[in-house]
Length: 94
Image (tube, rainbow, N blue to C red; front, side, top):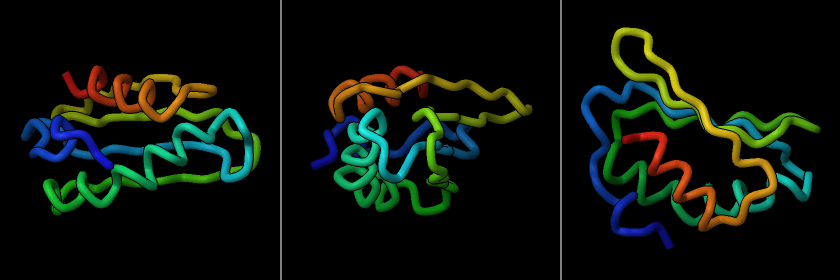
């Protein structure tokens, strides 16, 4: 279940979130769990925000956040647990 911190609206400056991961790799397992358990809550609280999931075999798990004025940040989440992915995601948005 998504934490209360993720079940709220994100900053207005956030324009897009992209997750890259491998659909079968063990290193992306935490990211897949994060998506499965948090996506619904995130989209319910942020219906207009593009939240893109890109799966490709062998791709290391990463999260990208694009903000206004073209500012883009990324974090590596390859090999992390679902809880660690959630922490990294929250850090990315601050």
